[in-house]
Image (cartoon, rainbow, N blue to C red):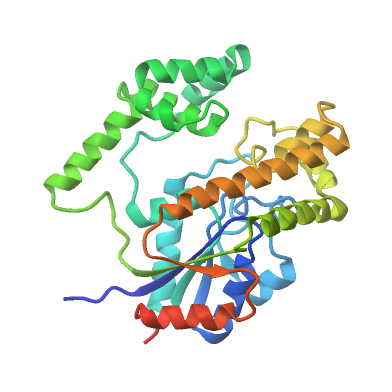
Amino acid sequence: MSVLPPAIFLMGPTAAGKTDLAIELTKVLPCELISVDSALVYRGMDIGTAKPSKELLAAHPHRLIDIIDPSQSYSAADFRTDALAAMAEITARGNIPLLVGGTMLYYKALQDGLADMPPADPQVRAEIEEEAARLGWQALHEQLAAIDPVSAARIHPNDPQRLSRALEVWRVSGQTMTAHRLRQSAQSTDAGTSGPGQLPYTVANLAIAPANRQVLHERIAQRFTIMLEQGFVEEVVALRSRGDLHPGFPSIRAVGYRQVWDHLDGKLTSAEMQERGIIATRQLAKRQFTWLRSWTDLHWLDSLDCDNLSRALKYLGTVSILS
């Protein structure tokens, strides 16, 4: 019986201290870092994503940072393909892939695989975007509820990316996203497997966050204020000046960017933009906690503990990640 190679997932909500702990781990373990963040993939989006500095990245390289332009899309399937390739390269060198970030959908896709969905169709997607501009996303959500109530129940009307994709799958293939997933699940059951593309690694699951949620809220507010002082608004001005981006792009829908964009459009005052940006980031953290609460075999660390490195190493030893 073959033994699967080790990997480490270091998860947690935004502003929890994941990067700092990951770097500490690389100093004592033969780890190489892979970013698991849907915003850090974009080039030119540095301040609002709290991207590690160029100096830090030079000293501690992260895979899957700065890999695409903000005008491009990057899906969970794209991430899984890229992450598996990076993990294989790291493992081949005898090192341990250490995946760090807070995009829980990416972790889920990597761990469990993805149902085989139709590829993206730019024309159909453009038609959906045009309908949304005319009718509003609520009307499109009602369309989805009529054809695929299961997907509509789990996709919020204010989540245009996932809503658009669900409608696109239906229009391209004539089958709902739910039907595709059920078929994939049935095929996996018939084949005696537990899902579409299980991860070929022994994974240790770590999560870090302040035990006191109020501490996290204070960190989020402080970080957003610092971003503004560092030139976040000017960064979005530069993105707008390109002329090929608009709020419909996934990159511009990233937390913080949409609020600054609305401010520059005159829809929000500076104070309103800051308040809504902080609120949106707190909502993101809440969603991340929801994902994490359902994660199995998860070992929690408190961001405020002074000995998280030793605690993490002790846990890794107990799950046979360290040989």
